[in-house]
Image (cartoon, rainbow, N blue to C red):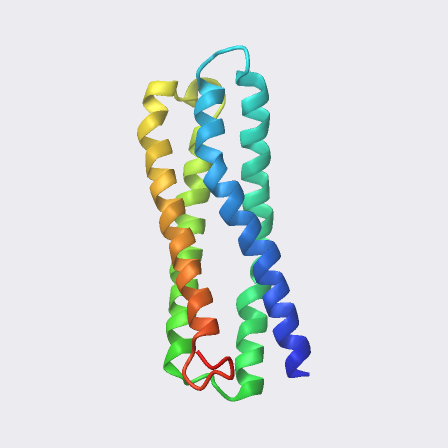
Length: 157
């Protein structure tokens, strides 16, 4: 059962978190291009909207990752190990970044009508999104390292 839980956990992390990291990293570029009012702006707006939907949908699906991670940790009897507690804390930080900073920032850049920013007005938001996405990606990289190089690991690391 532990192997099944771990397999689902790892697959969900690859699919969900991987998709979010790529889509969120690409989003600011296309969002700014969409606001430039050039000929390619329509296509860029569609790509930016799609990237936002990918981030949002996979964020919802990504809830599976910590659920199966905790189930795997319980099955292995490591829920109180420091590396797992740190990983869970980092997961919460990543979720907060995504839910309260990255996704709302994307929505602001996708605003239409009177609320739509100009390209110049949007640059600080896009730069902030780029930075936050980098932090989000770095947090997940640290979690991956903790999962691989953990105390008592059988990998020999």
